[in-house]
Length: 163
Image (cartoon, rainbow, N blue to C red; front, top):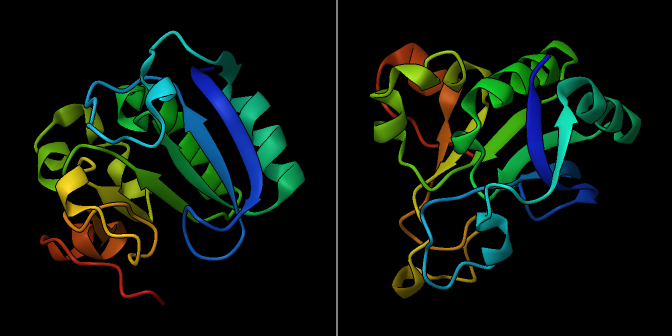
């Protein structure tokens, strides 16, 4: 059973994807983006260690689709893959925010098991000069909302259509 460093779990939020969602904020980020709205999440030793089962109890209790954020969930790929598989098994959709790009993640073997379990990947670092408050579900215009299932099945990156 994998464990993850969890900063917070917030149920019923509407800012991290469509509809009401359970957002799980994971500890640790090495991107250190200037202007980050959550720099306290950078500490890899922050938060509380929780098992996938403990997290899933909360997800099931709240009964919303799920978003992983942080920090950057991709710094905990093995635990996130186990959590994502449990989220998928229970029928919830999964969004994941990362400062890595789709291209970077696709090129790294350690993410091969995880990427197919994500419905929408919000990729790329936050760039303060490209900050745009009018964008839905992301902070800067370089970040993309990627439909992972369509991207992986087609072999090329497909942006989420909003449906």
